[in-house]
Image 1 (spheres, rainbow, N blue to C red):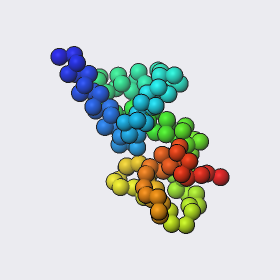
Image 2: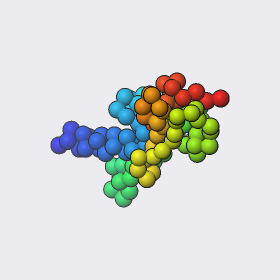
Image 3: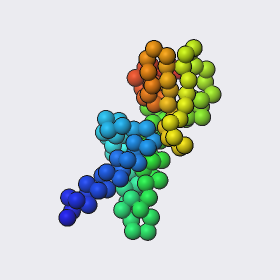
Image 4: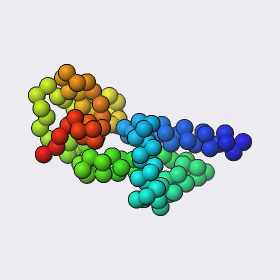
Length: 124
């Protein structure tokens, strides 16, 4: 029973982090960062997920977004959207409230934050 409950909450948390733009590999880095830098926030976020009264992923998503900003030099999506892009590149969102994406001609598409982390998009 316990392993089934843990798997269910793990799945809910993974979907919440995926919704803010953290894929499976990024989630591993996120949890390492959160345990080292924001253990209290992480415990509170997980508690919110399992607490009978709230059952909310809002705090986990907010912590995920904080991680993304920390990995992208502190830039928010709004900051990024206002920056000039190279020719043939554009920002977009695949869904309302989804992560900010970038499409670069001849390269493809990814999250804007992922493009910054990988060095594909250079900020000045």
